[in-house]
Image (cartoon, rainbow over all chains, first blue to last red; front, top):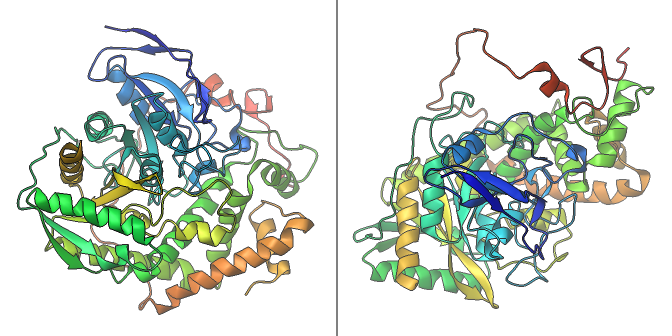
Length: 432
Length: 89
């Protein structure tokens, strides 16, 4: 049954950058379901800005592969959600079009960079949305807003049409009110796509199963150590206790490479960003450069005006780290560090089925609380390891601290997205 | 440590520009981040080995592509079916 749904939400949180008042839909697994899309995922004939002024007015001539898949299953694309510009941030305050507010407490940030998608769900405007996760951008806002978000295994969901920020780290993934919603959405978007050379033929046909008896959970000490708020750690420990009551066993473990994982992450993503974002020069799309000026002067003018501060900072950091004389010290070392993170996970996963800990070291910050870039980067410490290793990781709400939601993060072996979904589902069913 | 002059140079290399009033703060923050990156000096070895990676290539055959008008649709300036760019020489 195809048709059209009306979508005119009272968006008090600035969750949407674009809404589609009349959204057509088809028939299928998601017939008539309203799905919100992060604004870095290309939607044919619907403005796609990455929350950047440099893409204001850009209307993609084609759909991302995931959008075609959603439409083929009948979903209604109801709008594009706010984000940190190009995905660079942890709060959605770096949007070129104003911050998104956290529906649980509007004086706080929703997390980022997929903050608009999380707020659209937490604010009751949609039940499902797509986000993207480069270093925690699905899981962080899911944790801060009290919803569920999955970063799939790298290669499981096509990145074709995702406007690139850091190709080797990012994945599109499902966000939803419940684990069942997230699992259902994952079933639609996962699978092989020949337009993405990193795509793997690993479709997801899974119905969540709450049976976790005999499951072995690794508890890394680094996830409960320095920098992690003690109350948040307590809430997460209790949640893991509930999993034990369901028949799981826990074993302590350690990820020594976490010492330098965050640095490796930021070197890698800024280097990739400096290359990826070179395409934004106002020539093929975006604000027109001054044609009378020379090439460099014209580009510099467009890019200094239309890129936000954080985007320019990351482009510059990447440019510096890749420059002659520094490559060996930064990028090359970061890749060795990344291999070490993978090796740590492989070693631990030889003995345990999943690894659990907090998604974020704190609850949602107050708006404008984090003004220093480095202190903002440090907030990503618990989410970046999964991106560096490419493994699946889910955040599921597990209680509150200071009245704000806390997320339980469950990481799994490569391509065992089904298992992290099951563990999250078992927890969700137990507490609800 | 990088100087304000270095930061200015990087901004020019990256074509992102930097205004004189931002230069001080930017340099300060840049140095704080680079200092944090120093932790990578503790990583042993050089040059990571890529495991399980294979090139995925397709045959070099012509396939359907987007219509010309769609490709040009977002360009701010066009001339005779081409995209206009600033002069290079």
